[in-house]
Image 1 (cartoon, rainbow, N blue to C red):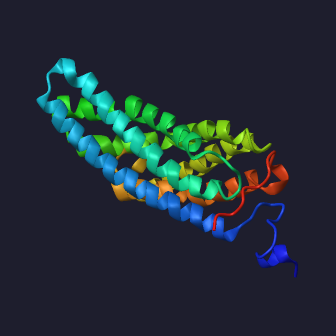
Image 2: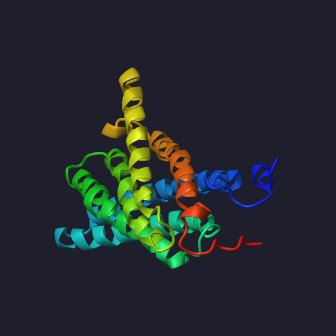
Amino acid sequence: MTASDSGLGATPPSGWDARLYWRWIAYNTIAFLIVLTVGFVLALLGSDVLHLSLASHHVLVALLVATLGAVLFGGVLGALQWLVVRERVPVPRRAWVTANIGPALLAWLLVIMPAVISAQTSHKNVSTAYLLAASQSLALGPLLGLSQSLVLRKVTRRWKWWIGANLASWLIVDAAVYLLSRLSGDLDVLSGDGSVIEIYLALIATTPLTGRALLWVLAPSALDVPQAPKPP
């Protein structure tokens, strides 16, 4: 048995590393839990503020709430993901976090806040509106992969595969959720009839796929820069 086989030597050509793989899943799980919970509170607080504001102030308040939500998403998810990425390549933390904020801001501005404002002005349930908007913004995955790939292209020749990996993982999870919703009417996250917990689980379901893809994309044989030294 070689050193690579035992997990004590150099990284194998496939890029596999069980420790980094499970850290990726764990860190993303923590990030999604924080983002969904705090994002839900932000959406509710934003709807209350919008309800008390004049109509001319709606756009400004919505922009503020969306920016806070995007910074939260990019800051939490990006920072935790970077803890794994940095063990393979010397990617600056600021660059990786910024790559997460951009797509998140689009999701909040184009999907979540319009849904919350519409529910508030039509006297509908704001929490239901947030649930539907959050489920629709599951499409953020491929956009996030595209943004992150622009950072990875500086360090790996397989950066384009990161876009495909994110797209494939989200399509697979969406297809699985759709099939499950056909079997059970209680599980219909894609149409907003599910629960926040189901959205959370759908998000987590993508991480085993993206985690394995990341290790392959950042395999030593594909890097254009020396491997980052492992932190103590």
